[in-house]
Structures are given as C-alpha cells and as structure tokens.
Length: 122
View 1 (cartoon, rainbow, N blue to C red):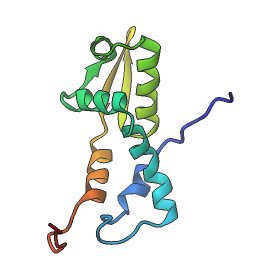
View 2: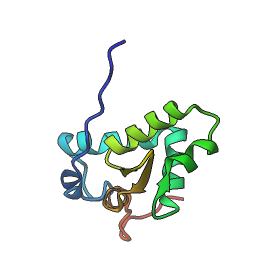
View 3: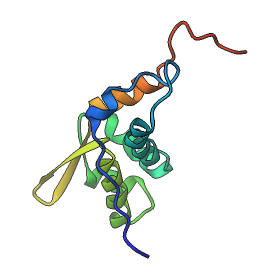
C-alpha cells in the first residue's frame, strides 16, 4: 500500500472563511479546512487534542500512557494533528512537547459560529 501524505494546512487561507451559516464555502476553502476536521474525526486524535489543549504544552511522555496503544501509533496520530495545522511540536532532548495552535482553533470556531440572527428550529 503506498504511503499517503497529508498536506500541511495553510491557516491564512482558512482565516478568510466566513461562518458556514453565513455563506457557503467555495471548493478551495473546503479543501484547506477538510484536513483539520478529518484529523479531529478520529477518537484517539480528538482525545489527544483535548489533552494537549487542556494545558499550555504537553510532553509525549505524558500522552502515551493515557492510551492502550503503542508509542509509534500515538506518534502517528500526533503527526496527523501536526500536519493538519492543529498542533506545534518542539523536540527537547529525547522528548517532543506539543502545544495547540490557537489560531487554528479560532478559525475552526469561527467557521462553526452561528450568527445570533439565525433562527433555531425546535
């Protein structure tokens, strides 16, 4: 099976997107944002993001024991999050530290924002 590469997300391209409830995205914007949502669509990656987002930064040595998965599998999930533009990482000695890219979360949040003028259906 050929190795699949995940494109790195251009966060500046995401910044231009209006909330989905205001205006539909064009194809180019959707192609930029989809890898972020895809990365968060996996339960392990969603949990990893939750753990990383709960603190200013977190060592991979603290993430791995929280899962019944191998270290290489956790590293793969973290790579997907990094390539999707959701986290940054920094190697310090033998450990890698992760932190959320706040601008990515602000941009995803802005996409999902529901304007006050939108009527709710009950």
